[in-house]
Length: 200
Image (cartoon, rainbow, N blue to C red; front, side, top):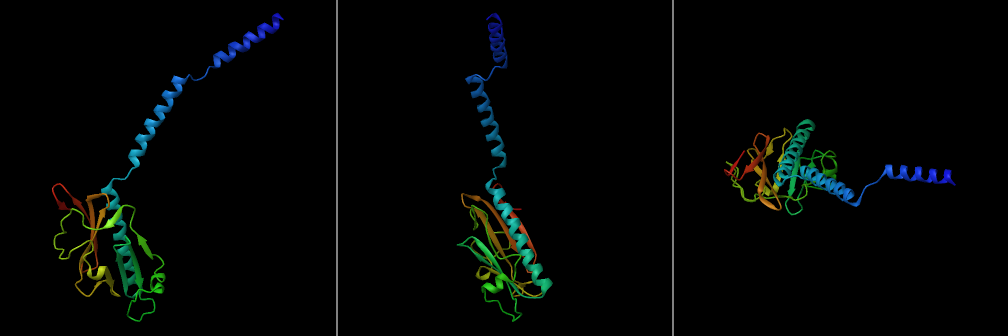
């Protein structure tokens, strides 16, 4: 009986030494985890201007891809911008008949491109930004008929064509970026700086 009591008290001491979390300790640990989690999440949140800038660089890369494809394969190309659908589609003159009619076969022929959608919360538009210096057009896309036609040499058609594609954040009209199209066929990404109110 005495041996049984000794074993029971030893077991009780062992359990007490193992301990556990009190309710207060548990609340403190959970609170700390939530605070650290919210700090980490805020660092991964993309700002409106960063989202628009990223989309502008992506679009410029896609336009360069279309230009390179036209040049390398010696066929005409076209990129059509759909401002209501917030997307753009590339077509190629796959049958070399010197015309693009925007049929599915012409889009499918350019497998590396197809139809691309703008990132979430990014739309075509100029928002609160002024025009890029030298841009003569109005609206979110200042290319004729909202399309960029490329010759077999990779130049915008008709010769001398220039324009700009503006991108704006849906919820912040000061977060604006743009891609200018030069008559040489080069593309440049720009960012609008609301203060001091200029493009860089």
